[in-house]
Length: 467
Image (cartoon, rainbow, N blue to C red; front, top):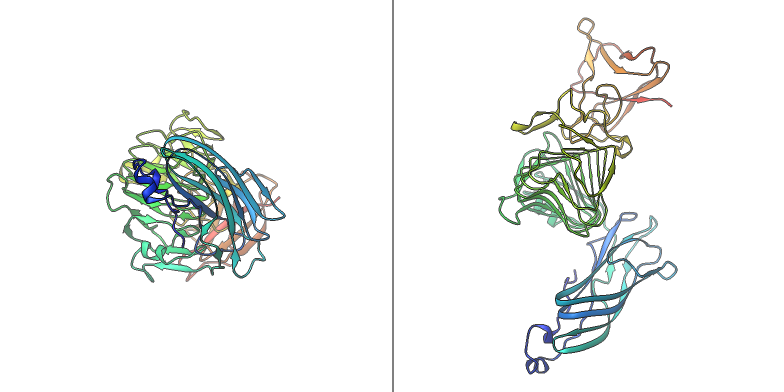
């Protein structure tokens, strides 16, 4: 992997005018950094960095050529000046005024390999620049350096603790597209994600990630572009999750107990938080930058600072403590979520919680589960709508008839509508139980047609209203 820093300019390190000519002026170059591999149709971020030192201003034209057929979906920073789809050429015109320690010029863009991409691919680029510092003006032109080619990477499952002694050890060996599966337990680690690597719970109770301490800068998970965390409890840290880049997702997680912020997004970080509970953090629950971040079906409540701070967030179908938020959103509620026992860390929903049946089903995929392993979109009080937060409330789940021991299900229904029932014993393979259950009233009763269930330790059912 190429270094993230290019050659420095010797005359810009605060040296006197007499010393600078003795040391000579090194050429400034942009250095490209690619992920460890690529996966067809999965977005990735490419970085181009140049260290130019103490400057007054920087101007330049930077060209980057992506592999044929690759789609450029965004420029993390700064916005692209142009993109020629026929030649695959990205172009930036930069005009930056600093009057201080500029330090570096950092560019990045997101691309998606086509489904048909196979084999190694190449990247190339060129930059011409002008900048001035305390010693004078400097001009240059050079090809980009660093990583120039990228190979396809097989997607692997890496299990902790079965295959690795720690989560960080599994992450360190992961390539772009890999998934780290984490078994139940408490893991006291500071995790540093790699681009395109996903963390996911593997079993219940959900694994808990706790930073080694809660001191300044001790973050439980430091995110990377185009990676995700799913089904985890993240507790007791300075920050639960820190995110500098776009393309990061938090799904079905509980984030609590940080001394600073539950999820911190830097100025240019655009991320998604879906179906999560962010509570009881001493600072803000969530901090968003100027890049749009989307928060859906989540509970942000009881944090020491603001539930959401910053103006770049779009908050939809969420439960918040108050309406003081500078961003945009819709279908939010501002009320106590009514947890079971927040003092003891039990953030499941009580029957009277306003979060029940209040979420958006469009962001829930078949097979999704909550933090306790329950299927999402279970019947709550009156509707087949997903609940807000990390826990689904299954008020009317399957029950056995006390006399016949037959399985029976009841749900709130619309008279005249028909319903389909699916069942699964492992939440992976779903089978059809009945596809034409007619509702004759506000509540429908259905009995398993195969008689008593014996020898089945657990069974899940999914109910769908037919169109």
